Length: 114
Image 1 (tube, rainbow, N blue to C red):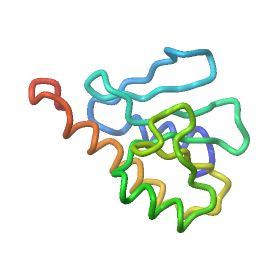
Image 2: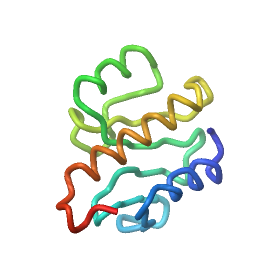
Image 3: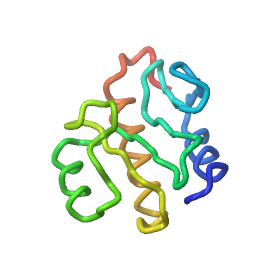
Image 4: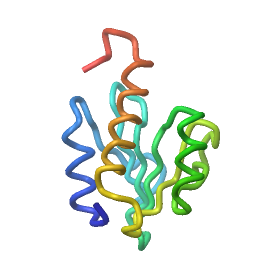
């Protein structure tokens, strides 16, 4: 999952996913219930993806994969930046996206959950 199109397609398949460019013209933000669960730097090669993560799991993933870093411009305890250079299996990337989405949905008021 290193192409922008495949990444964007997977993110948008999440129930209630909404795309925005609130910060600039190159940072795609994907939200659910008005809360961010993914940010993608569309002008970067390789692509970089910020995802919310359980703090303990975030540390473990950073130890396993050198291309997972503390979240750039985010709370580094709760967010990871994932460099999509092909070194992380696509199944792991999808799992991290699923976890980020689930964490955000879990934090939403019931009325805003998809």
